[in-house]
Every structure is written in C-alpha cells, then in structure tokens.
Image (cartoon, rainbow, N blue to C red; front, side):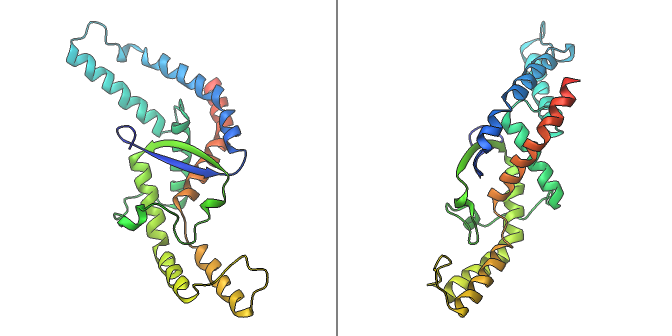
Length: 213
C-alpha cells in the first residue's frame, strides 16, 4: 500500500493504451485547476481558524473531494479516472458488494490458472482505493475459484499438454478444448483493470464536454 487508503496495482494493457492515456493530460490538468478553485470556496476557508478547527476544515475538504471523485464529478488524476471506470465495471457485473475474504493463494505472485495477462505488452501503474481493489479481488476470486480448481485438476491429468504444439492428436485437441472452456470461466484482476481503463477512455470525451460547459 503506497498511500493511506490506496493500493498500488499494475494493469497490463493492449499496445497503444499508454499513448491514449497520455492524451488525457489536458483533461486531468483542467480538473486539477477546477479542484483548486473548489478548494477556495468560502466553506473550506481556514483563515482565522484555530489550529484544530483549520485541520478539521482541511480534512472535511479532502472528504468532500473524495466523494466528488467517487461520484465521477471530479477526475483530477488518472487514478481517479480509472477508479471511476473500475467502479462502473463492477456495477455492470453486479460485483459491487461485500465479498468473503479471499484465501492467501489468491494474493500470491504469479498468474492464476487460465490467466492470459502475460500476453499484454504495456503496463500502467495505478494507485486505487483499497476498498475498490478488495472488491475486485473478491469478485474475481469467488466467481473463478471453481474453474481454477478444475484447471489444476486438468493440469494433473494432462501434465504434458502443449497448446502450441503444431501437430496434436484428437485426444489432445479434446483436452485443450476442455482447458479453453474452463479458462473462459476465470476472471482475473487484470481483466477488470483493462475494462476499467477502457471505460475511463470511453468516458473521457463526456467528462471534457461536461466540465467545459
């Protein structure tokens, strides 16, 4: 965890995604200017306040700014914009709820069985709210755990299976078809990060129109 209340994650994404995100810098800069203007509103003014009162006023502004970000009413950082996209993806999947804790194996380094995250050529580092990351991990694990277990059983049955082998027997083809069926039932956290980034990119023009008006 890199900052209080946030967790550092790395999204593996399609080629060209970083360039598209870089193109959003003017939007994010404009939103930072708008945030500074909002912070100067009288209700957040600390002039003349005692130390404790000033500290509480500043904390209240930070809470208000967090609520604006959560509602998609302020996207002054890339993290805030992607968080908006991830929350939209969770809502679409019906995953925006409290999940049981995930087991330690879900947090170990390395890819889950069925994962294809290694195929994505670019990386995007992000700091996302710990609550959002926890929901993503819980949703991914608890909707994928049964398929992950079956994929481990599959590997025990077919330890020498090679999907890239040029010439395969009919039996191998059937085994690999079973693997693909099970792998399709696994949703990795990387899938959600990519979906959240895609939603953020798709929403950016609307944010630009809304905040420019």
